Image (tube, rainbow, N blue to C red; front, side, top):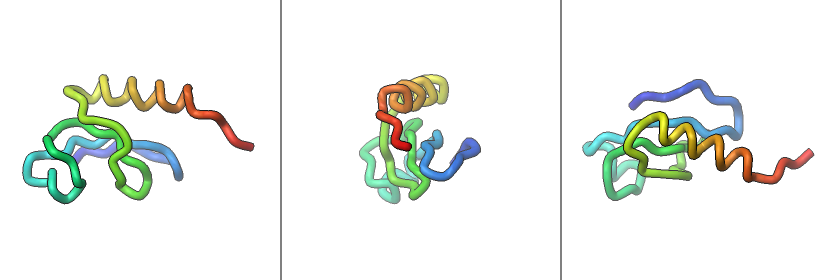
Length: 66
């Protein structure tokens, strides 16, 4: 599994391989956005770039709390 650096409560991109699909409760391999508890939040995506783009879009659209 490939992970990007993550701050607390942020999402990180990870490639979930075929043999790990059951561990993450997803139906197919691919790039996914996971939270800091390793729960799948977004995906699957065909590429890391697509996953990162969707994570940025989600962050931009999520209301910020003080």
